[in-house]
Image (cartoon, rainbow, N blue to C red; front, side):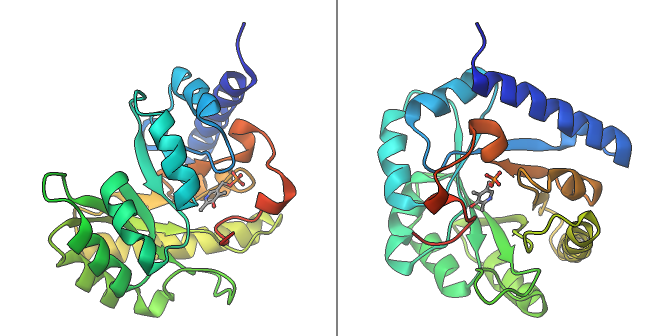
Length: 238
Ligand SMILES: *Cc1c(COP(=O)(O)O)cnc(C)c1O
């Protein structure tokens, strides 16, 4: 019997394929990242059994406990939450990707603290594309200066951009924000051809993100089911 998570993943793959078809994208170029905040190791294992190999976590301590229970699973771990500077060492040691870098001090610490026997840490810069005071992210007009500095750090690999636009049901507004991200992404790629990742789109706005060029969608709710209310807001510190 197939599990709910397995069914949800099948539906998400269908949604990705349909959006790709509609907007002229290659579905093979869109990776589904499972956002597992508040979820248990058993649920991650079910997702992996259904083909997931990229997992995103927001809260360090929660992630570390889970990672210990998921050691046997072949997954890449992405840190996608706000980063306090006293948490960078564990992030540098345990994660494969960090998608929420928005200032140089954090990037420097991650590079310094990345163990030399590990490959460079993959980095996406988080952009505050909707200019929300409550949200993390570098303002768009400071992005390229940050990218230039991050690209020089030896133990990091600048891979692209991440954004969490203003939550809205209005597809036109969703699409505007994602389109603005795509412009920044192209600018980044012109400077750094190795940057190949545009991480945008969550359960409620995945289609519009795909329409505007996302190649990583980060899905929690529509993959694992609804979260408890105090965990519902994306990317906010506990
Ligand atoms: C929680 C979260 C997601 C997933 O959001 P859903 O709406 O549950 O799909 C994606 N990205 C980040 C940064 C998050 O914090």
